[in-house]
Length: 141
Image 1 (cartoon, rainbow, N blue to C red):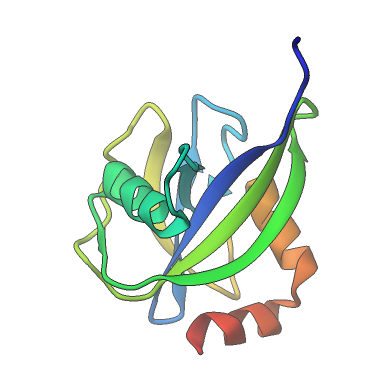
Image 2: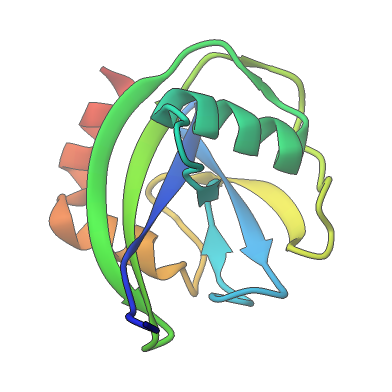
């Protein structure tokens, strides 16, 4: 049976002084778009554990706090369906490094009110689901 099914992704919103960390994706779906740290939720893994693992694997940053956030449901590249669970990390140790250069060109900090383009589909959906001001308020409270 080759039935298509949704997958669960975890997006990590790393927040520092009104800015979020975004990486320019490559070698995967959404190549060339800007996205949060993230990846697939593994079987038996908690959302927080997934967020911590992906953050360390991709950037070398160690998360010190987690706040579960909103979610989105998206068709990506017309043949992939993802439910993305967002996690806010606003306390962490380390500076971002591109530890998976085959998946991410670079990491940069962006002001929440001046995000780059194009954005990865789940982030676009997140911004549509919540007004920018409402989302920013949720992030800092």
